[in-house]
Length: 303
Image (cartoon, rainbow, N blue to C red; front, side, top):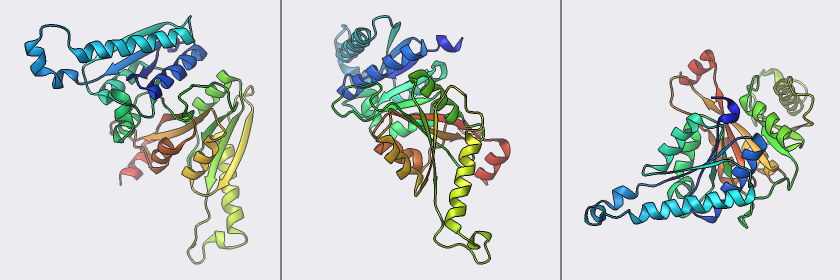
């Protein structure tokens, strides 16, 4: 299947935050020239088993689920009339459905919280499960707490640059998102000067803080060495915790992009503290992009 044929998949549950995710996903699908796929998942059959045996009619929860999906589809169509839209209602665990959908999606989109189904699951640990196992980039729509999806309010995409930035999928994803929106990309690399350096450590000679900052700047340049000419770039090094630096940067961004390391012979992504913190505290939508480790790096991680 061609990349343009891969849909933007959004999990819906009928809540206002879930519908805001539909709005965001519809806008993103148009930017990508991709179809939009709306998915509702719930285990209603498990909870209505006795009633199903007595009532040959269609289960109430399934009728409700279909109404929710139809409402979301009408909303997406009203926002983007020319968008190609498909829907799916599945009697299964939401996290399993979304991970499976991510195998044939260009992007997976969810709300940050909700009343039931997918979005309710995503308000807790299941959100990290889905983000940690998705096979494509995933966006959790945060911010705009009046439940209105806005486009271009800040005119900036932010990407967090990790310690080993060479060939970063997150940076490549951020280039494309900035290009689609026609906005600048800000690349952020956080650095810290350890409180105690071992005796005789070379960084003790001269200015340790300056040297740590210089190293961060060099890593930032390495990450951006293949930057496309048509994307306006802003580089920024920040002293402090990476999580704090990215959450602060999210307050002036339309999208925050972070990478998640994928370890060989492990299922899905292994999300660290930075991803956890950003997913819970970002002021704007967060894109989590799978990053693959090399074999040598992966062996070091496992040992």
